[in-house]
Image 1 (tube, rainbow, N blue to C red):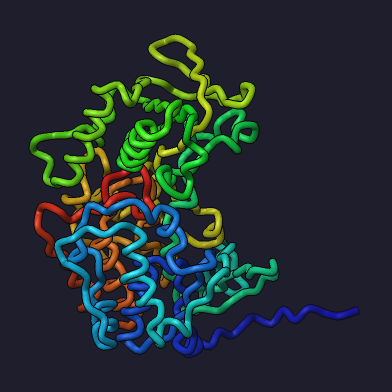
Image 2: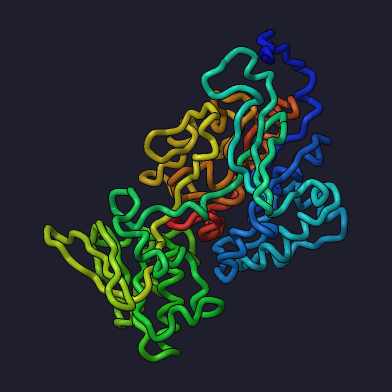
Length: 438
């Protein structure tokens, strides 16, 4: 019989400094974190579940951002790129998601110091401490993280890390079509007829929507972009019809306003308003969806509307209800999250969508992003939980502060600044669906 060695484990605290920082996600924010670590001479590894850089952004690459180039490039990343001859595109022009990737994010990922540390097609399935679940406290902060990954062939392994920066975004974790937030009753039956937010209705996904009735569910700017694409498709392809289904009496986030500080956002709202007025988009408001079911070649959405049960028939449903963070991989990490928006507790009051738009969120850094799990940070769109007001420039300042803290430079980490003009600073739906900004 083999006896277990129950001798208390002695942790070598110096080992932490020899390990890399693990970055989850190779999108704009994850790679910005990598760029800052390069400048500080700290080793790292980037895990990207997709088979290419910024795979989530590529999914909605046809969509144009609200922000111009001058607000979309991280300073440390720009320094690395310009040292290799890269030139910032037209600073005043707003790119599409595809242009953002091809002209900035992909070149950044190709910088030698970063490219050698990026692992594509690697999914992070869990984060913990080596030999310690979340209930164990002794020597916890001095114990390396264990990042469990699954590679393309399904094999899993644990990778040791000194710190973890979760920049995995939220695009792959949509909110439910059900108004309760729970998975829609009958979702398994209708899943084949439900498209994710921001489909390319005039390009890649055209055949799925042409000559059919599509219902867009959601009241944010991702819904607005899709509605306008469908309205144009209806003009080009006979038999194409569009319904906009919303929970409230009005889609306040997309409605145009004369005093909107973002001209492009106001224009988007005005275009949707006009399409509705022209009859190209039918609005079905006040609907609380409770069930979906198959109905011949199409589907039916069943819900409550003004006290009555209603049934809405359609061919295709676009889920533009926004996104939420995937917290399943963090079950063994000690998190301190706001109970409403699921953002870090100190950050939540600064981003409450009932109070703030993307232009009014205060700069914040490692202090607001700190959890009881020392050395673990959620950054980027995922740090905003269910709040839809994320701004790319804010995410860049997050990772600048966090990486400074990891480097032991508390003064720099604490000096959080974000200087942007009041207008033209928001993008649309960078990994975050229902809101206005990125």
